[in-house]
Structure formats: structure tokens, C-alpha cells
Length: 228
Image (cartoon, rainbow, N blue to C red; front, side, top):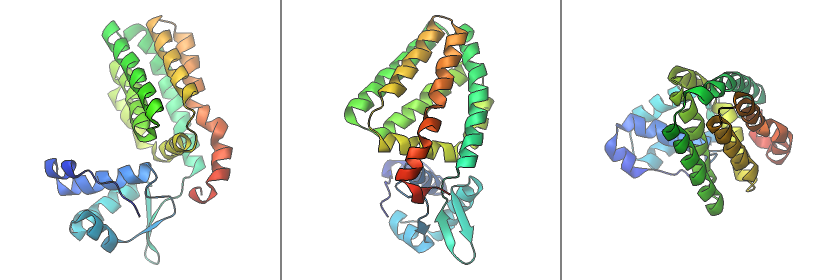
């Protein structure tokens, strides 16, 4: 098991938050792979904390469907559920399609410039082949559009359902280093918002969100053990 630990976060925040955030980040980034068993004792030794914050984190991650716990087997990183992922993507596509149309009217020049800057940072990630940071910037890109339109709670709703879908997205980035189509779609979304073209903005967004669906079968074949 190879867990990336952000020690500086431990100093700044509460232990229980540190444990939860560390475990979730490593699950989402597939360092803790789907189907892997995890033991409290192992996590205690690795994170250098007591059992209480470990148990609290495991309960929270179970509620988020990232961990499954049974009396017989203990805790296991949940397999990726394609049905859950597709339902999440349906909700996301429906809501974000409506909001990106609003963005064409509501976002000002500074907010559009922020989106352009995020895409520029994503291009830097491509040159460095940093898929973890690219995913974070992808999320920040979509979040900025939602928040810019005053849809904070809508973004929160999307995130509540996104755990399985997000792991597929990260798996796609990690499995295929050709990210040019993703960046081109982001450029297209920004351009449509800047030109106040809601039809084109919605089309580009839908094409973007459906990209992983096109590739899901090849991902499942390459990483069959990760999927339910």
C-alpha cells in the first residue's frame, strides 16, 4: 500500500480531517486501489494516529460509497460501480448544461479570464504529465462556472454523487496521456461563454462530459479488477 501523506495539512488541521482527507485523496487517485483490503492497524501505523480518527474516517468514507465494511471481511476499497457512475453523470450533464447556458449571460470578463487561466494551467499539467493536478484543475474549471452563476448548492449536489464517476475520470487520465481533446473542449467552452453563445457552450459541455462514456469499455477491459 502506497499512501501519499500531506504532513503540512496535519499541522494545520484537525487529526480527524487529516485522516479523512488523506484516505479519500488516495482512494480517488487510485493509490488505494478498488478491491484492496485495508486494516485499521495498518492505517494507524502508516498515518501515526490513534484508532479513533481512523474509524471516524472509515465511517464517513463508507457513507460516501468509497469503502465497504462487513463483519466477516473488514474494510475494502469499493469497486467502481458503472451504474452509479452513469447516474451521477446524467445528473451532472443535466445540471451543468443548464448552468453553462446561464454562464454565457452572467460571467463577466474577469471570470472568463479566470477560466482561461485554468485551462493554461491544465496545458502545463499536460506537458508535465501530472494527471492528479490536471484532475484538480478540471474540477476547479467546472466549479468556477457553477459558482460564478451562483449555483454553489448545485455544485455541492453534484459532488455528493460523483465519487464513482470521478474515479473513472482519474483512471482515464492515468491510463491515457493524450489529454489534448480534453483541453480543446475546455477551450471551446470558454470561447462559447466569452462569445455569449449558449447553444455552442452547451454542446461543448455535453461532448466533454460524455467523453469518458465513450471510453468506459476500454477502461473496463484494461482494469477489469477495479470494476463491479
